[in-house]
Image (cartoon, rainbow, N blue to C red; front, top):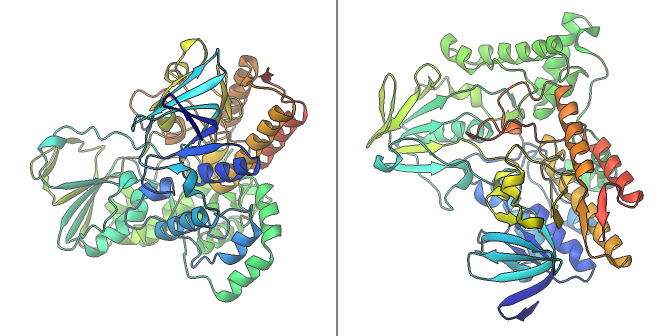
Length: 535
């Protein structure tokens, strides 16, 4: 790094030290470029650094939720269970940082406040909370898709005298729930994982639910030595399969028939097989679950029937049975989630019937009752895909801010670049498949595409690359067309930003599949970066 007049000069500045940022740094070093990561947290790990809530666990199997770029790394690391805990994933992230000596090029405890492109210099100027100013030819946003926690905006929050926590920004010390009366607001993926664990220790747990979620038993278990050995000897095949799989997951087995191509008995047998296997590939049992409403109803009804088999109280079981299509939200994978509602110390409150009015000194008040709590947990989700980016004052050409450009919804080309913001790349940004599958596969594909692009720029003596407006518009039209051909945008999910008040309802991920997306990105690179202005 070169520092001149309080300006630290770089070739590339990366925002975020999660898995995307760390791999980006590793690859930029290979090119011999001066690169630095700026990270808000005290250490690496990204979402796994912040999301330490009880029961936090990945919903992609451990052997696939890991880097593929280093054979040595694959062989030396041993995953202990089918689905890794947050602590094990964070340990892995730290191992990667240490193994490749990444920390020397990471500035921790610094939040990026602004990033401004100076057209006369063809450089980005990035300011941080510590007062540092960095200049760089390229600015790469590895800010994550689920890293901006939705603001807690309940009336009376300041008056509540008990302890309160947010699942997406959990304390770094253990919270003891023993003998405590606990309330948790929200039943999304984080809450589905946390609720069974908290209920084990709490004197009483009250769950406040707005929308029921579909969840499939994870069937998590310890991996045997023989399984780990087999995976390690077969990793190259597994990685190739994942790269060419629709959701970036090699272990997913996709059905080859439609729901009503077979008898009721055969259909239920196939659903049962998926249920027994566990995990989030339940929707892959048949080809048309994500496209045909009648087929979707059959899958949804099977899961609802399972919920009603498990939950003993009929009224509670009905409340826990989702009314939406099973394909419109990311499917949850749980350990004893529905079983937890059979415990005598757990209650479920429907806040559609009795809305939360405010927090009080001792708890909270709904339109019907007052509740006293020692601890309240907010599991109310994220400003997904865009929040971490728009929270930074990013200014592109002609003084236009990213927040203004995205006022009516995010716009990008391939989820990688944005018109009006030259030399800025977004890893797994809106308009890419990212959250619709295995994030590790998405991260590696994006990083490697960006690296090839920078190589192309350098070898051809080019200084600036920017998405063309026509290409950006055509890409976002395609994202919308593909989403509308599925059942993914049929409900109020965070995929469309419906959980954030005032956020424009736009389906943000590319739903055409990882393989098709990868082929399109490769095709664009091979045709001299069609859709980009290079100068």
